[in-house]
Amino acid sequence: MDIVSPESAPPPTLTLRDVAKSFGQVVALRSATLVAHAGSIHALVGENGAGKSTLIKIVAGVHRRDAGEFLLAGEPADFGSTAESKAAGVAVIYQEPTLFPDLSVTENIFMGRQILGRGRRIDRTAMHAEASRLFAGLGVHIDPRRPALGLSIADQQIIEIAKAISLDARLLIMDEPTAALSGVEVERLFTVARRLRDEGRAIVFISHRFDEVFDLCDTVTVMRDGEYVATRPIAETSVEEMVGLMVGREVSDLFPKTPAEIGDPVLEVSGLTSRGVFHDVSFSVRAGEIVGLAGLVGAGRSEIARAVFGVDDYEFGSVRMKGRTVPSHDPAAAIRAGMAFVPEDRRKQGLVTDASVTDNIAGVIRGGLAKFGLLTKSMENRAVAPWADRLEVKTSSLDMFAKTMSGGNQQKVVIAKWLATTPTLLIIDEPTRGIDVGTKAEVHRLLSELAGQGMAILMISSELPEVLGMADRVLVVCEGRLTADLPRESATPESVMHAATRAREIAS
Image (cartoon, rainbow, N blue to C red):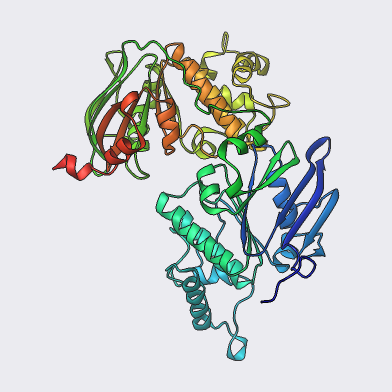
């Protein structure tokens, strides 16, 4: 049997060593290193602000490095554009792909390089056939003739992968690709990723979700504060070690839940029904209590929260705050009653990205800040600063635009905006989605402190460990029905998942 010596082994597909990058006075990368091999899935992890995105943008041709080594298949590389990067066999699959919605799936795959037939006319039949072949090779079925408009995020990502394969990409970078996907869609994406690995392609996978990293990847590289920290085979590391490397300290407890005195009911929901969405939902949340709303994606959790706050309407039932009925479909009335609502999609529903930190935090309370009809920027800053400080929003200035901030800091700004209203009930949907482990612990600590001060909290989360770690009670929703109300001591992964899949049993 022939043995391949280290000297004759092929070079890594991607080699980055001691890469540095600054933007003016801001140092994004100090000394970043990443080595990815063909036939392997390599995880890249780190807190928000660790430099992961900047490093990937250098590989993608968006930025040029200031210093360090960049090799592709052993050859020096220095891309001046994304077109150069793609031509060299690099493809980046983002969390939210940008397809042309009015074009067909096939047209999106072959944009700018259509297959030509006789008379140099576009051969749509050949293009559709090639698109079908690409999808078959990935083990998925998507109609190549249908328009891209209306496709799920998961299908759009598969189309981007098919496009990359058609360009013979040897390196695929997946940047938080699962953040907006359901469990079934994640597993399909992982199946595709494993096929690509087995074909001999190199894959770099960026994610905040440790369960996905351990399920999918072979190797992990950790970054912190723009620097390389360590590389480990997945089989030889643990979540605890990875967290310690990421944050530079031991984080033995990601869910710092402290006991709080539970008081009288603050929110009482009775018989809430919206046809085709949720049915006969009744529950309460008491002062000092964190109630987790759990269930599978699509179960109706967010829809219930939106109805309680008045964003969406409902046909039957009632919502009461401290014994007083809150009118339906009236968020302003909900705010006056003492409710606050941090939505799931902070960028689209909770944040004005082109506005400053001050403008965002003051957004709901601005009407009450004016004196004698006069409102100045300094008055807004004085009202906002304590909340920005309390949530430890990392910003050089309160005038800084929200769009320039990390996901974790954006989440803190949205939470600060609603805490500034001094609510008695906080409804928070997916409080830690898309943020790093260190910021997750900060958000969890804040929720625990708020509950300790007597605030009632309704927390919706798709992360079962988060629900079990933070909630005093767990409400489980399945197919729009409340199927369980579990005290903390009875809430286990098994009991929650059983209730999350038994709506038909309850209905019958």
